[in-house]
Amino acid sequence: MQGDANQIRDGLRDVIDFEIGLDVVALGLIRDIEVDPDKVTVTMILTSPMCPMAAFMMNQVKERASEMTDKPVEVRMGQEMWNPEMMEEEARDALGI
Image (cartoon, rainbow, N blue to C red; front, side, top):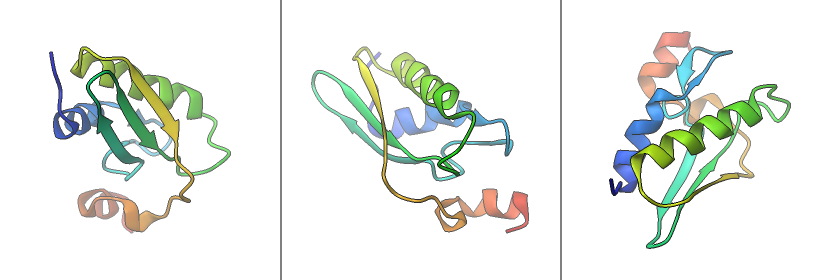
């Protein structure tokens, strides 16, 4: 199945940050999705540089994005520092922010 960036982003809503209880898209952790002819590159950040779930979540993002496309997927760690303003409004409301 070929997936475009929006379809992949929607699929990544299945990846949950278990420490916070919200998905990586709602939290604003998925910063970019590039769909090239031969691969997909997902750039993501973490809520904390010391996130103990980093490797697990990056692997989950890679696996879920792979399910959405027939191309190899690379997950890159972005350099931005996360802040609550990156969250979707519904996610901020759910956390009372």
